[in-house]
Each structure stands twice: as C-alpha cells, then as structure tokens.
Image (tube, rainbow, N blue to C red; front, top):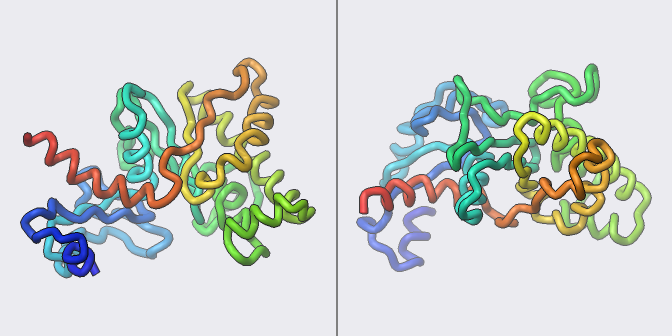
Length: 248
C-alpha cells in the first residue's frame, strides 16, 4: 500500500525519508519499541518487526503524541500546551517549552486511565471509573449506531437520548479539563475524532468548565484542535520531517 501510494504521488524511493507508525500504545522515546498496548495486546514489540515488511526507515509514535506534534506545528510561538485526544480511547500529551514531556517511563499524559469516578464504569484496561469510560467516543456512542456524524445529527435535531448522553459526557469532560488546568496552568486543546466536532459542543463545555472554576474567565484555556482529521498521521510524518530539516 505504501509503495502504491508513493507511485501515485510521483515520488521515487530515494525521496522518502521514512514511515511514521502512529499506534495506540506506550512507545519508547526513540520510537524503536512498542512497550505496551491494551488495544493491540502487545508488549515489547520492536519496530523492526514492522520495518521488515516496509522498505523505508520506520518509527513508532504514540497516537496522542503524534496528534499533539501536528497541533504544535500550527501554533507558532506557543510553548506550553496539553493536547487531549478524544478517540475510541482518551489520551493526552503535555508540551512544556515547546517539547513533549514523556515522563520517566513514557507514560506521561495517559489521562484516559486516570480514575474519574471511584468504583465507576469498567474501563477496557480492567480498572473502574477511568476517564475512558466516560469521555471517549466509545462511551459517547454506546447504544448508538452510525458514528459521530449521525450522533450529532440526532443531538442537533433534539433527540432526548443523544442530548442527555452528550450533556453527561461534557460534564465529565469538564471535570477532566479543569483538573488538567489546575495541574499544568496552560491551554488545553480538544482533539481527536471528537475534536473534529468541537464547534458543536465547545460553548457548552466551556460553560460547564467555568462553573467548576469561575476564577478562569470564559474558560478561554479550552481550545478546538486545528487538525480535524488524521492529525496523528501528520504528526507521525513530522517525526522524519523535523529530523530532516535539522540536517539542512
């Protein structure tokens, strides 16, 4: 597929810097090892196992990190930022001094597994009450068919069940964002698949966040993402692009 894509774009193999692999996993800082993935049920998987089938240099990157990297490229001059990735699971990454902070073991930003409701709903990780179980796209769409676009069409049309579900999700999301703001005192960007619909729910989310902390006027720290689709793909590609630019 990669070679077909390259040929369709009219590039030669020599023009390809490499292939970034955005994955739902904890990844080593050098991008060479997928340390752990609940989704893939993999541990300590080396990138060479993928690269053996791809004729270019490869690197892993954790998907929220990839999306955040793409977002930071669009925000010239911004040094501190927390990117909240709302997909089928929830992830995040903190940027400080324009650089991502990965923590001692590469697990920084795993906000989806922060306990939001003690003894609450079961998360796919096995714990109860995680942010994932309340704020993810999977939680929002539970018992709904047709995906996010159909869900928001229902909500906009006044469907009571969809409206109640969105209100509940935003209430929990506001608590999560308020916690991030208190911890890091920086802008929080709402991204991922749900972030693509930010204009439909951001006013209500800001109102809920403001009610939790009226000292922050207008809850202006909450921002909509710039990339509404495929942000993680852009970020994965930037791994190689940034390295290349540094050599010029």
